[in-house]
Image (cartoon, rainbow, N blue to C red; front, side):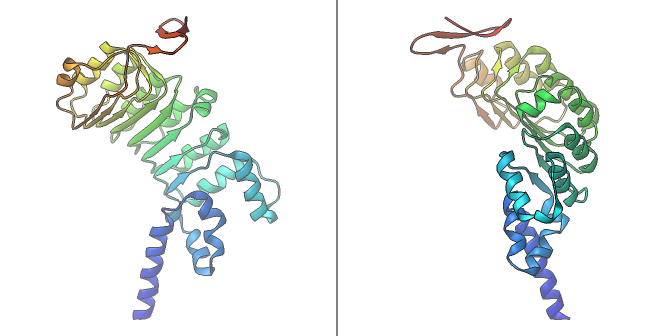
Length: 269
C-alpha cells in the first residue's frame, strides 16, 4: 500500500512538472521517454496551458512525421486535437496566426475554464467579426493579450458584460483612442494594464490615470502621443508599478520626421 501511494505521488509530481513544458516537447519528446511518461502526457492536467507554436509548416510537418498513422491532417484538425486533450480544463490559451475560424470557435466552446487568452494580430484581423461574441463564452477570463486589435472597444464591452473576474489587459503595437480608453476605464477590476508601443493621446492617458483606481501596474513605455512629466507622475502616484520610459510625442529619424496624423496614421516628411 505504501509503495502504491508513493507511485501515485510521483505520478502527481510528474503531471505537475510536465504541465509546465512547452507544447512541442509535450507532443514530440515526453511521450517517447518511457511508458509512464507517455501515460502522464495524456493526462488533461498536462494540457491546461495551451501555448501553440507559431511556425505552421514546421509544426505540422513534424506532427505528421510522428503521427504518420492518422492520415491527412488539417490545421483545424491539429488545433482541435490539442484543445481536446485538455478535456475542457484549459486555463491558458495562446493561439497562433494560422488558427482557423473553425478552430477558434471550437476552442471557445471547449475551454469554458479559460482565464488567460492571447490572440495574434493576423487572427484578430481575419476574424474580427466573431471574436467579441466568442469572448462572451469565456466567462472566467481574467487576462487578455491582443496585438493590433481592430475592434478593441467591442471586445472590451463584452468583457465588461460577461467576464466579472477580469483584471489584466495587454494591447501591443496598436492605436488606443478615447472611446477605447473609456471602455478600459469601465472595467471595474482592472489591475494590470499594458499599452506598450501604442499610440495614445495624453488626454486619454489622463482618463486612465484618473479613472482606473485599482491599477497596480501600468506599462506605457515606448508609446507615441505624449511625453512624461511631473503631472503624469503625480496622477500615477497610486500605482505601484508605473513604467513610462521611451514615450514621445513623435518619432525623429535621421532622414525624415515621423508624426502621427489621426486621419491616415503615420505621415513621413
